Amino acid sequence: MLKAIFCLIFLCLSNLVFAAGNVPVYTDAKPTAMITSAQPTFIIKLKANPTTGYSWFLRGYDSNLLTPVKHVFEAPKNTKKLVGAPGYELWTFHVKPAGFTVPRQTMIRFVYARPWESNNTSTTVVFTLMTSQSSKS
Image 1 (cartoon, one colour):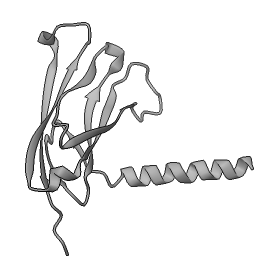
Image 2: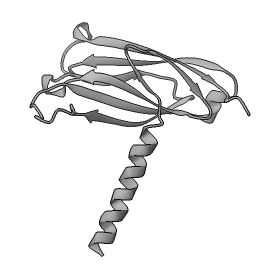
Image 3: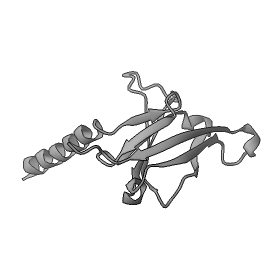
């Protein structure tokens, strides 16, 4: 029974990893995203180091068009697993069907800051998101 449960968990995790491989990923080096109705989910990947007290905060997005789905920290894939090493924050979003009724352009704004400090020490990154219907074959 335990072996069957382990196999089931392994298969579920494998499917999640495989599915995540198809999701487009955007970084601050590529802050413009073109999202189609065929793939309405996307990820924004931002460099982060939570051991410094800094975190990325979602400060602006159109809630009529977008739904934040998940936010996780991805530690470095270094085998030494250095304490305090930087990694990435992954923000997953889903464009609602209303985002594809006509082509749209919207912004997603993030701020990298320490929650207890003023905004004068923060870094802001803005992503431009454009949507379009998938072309029908």
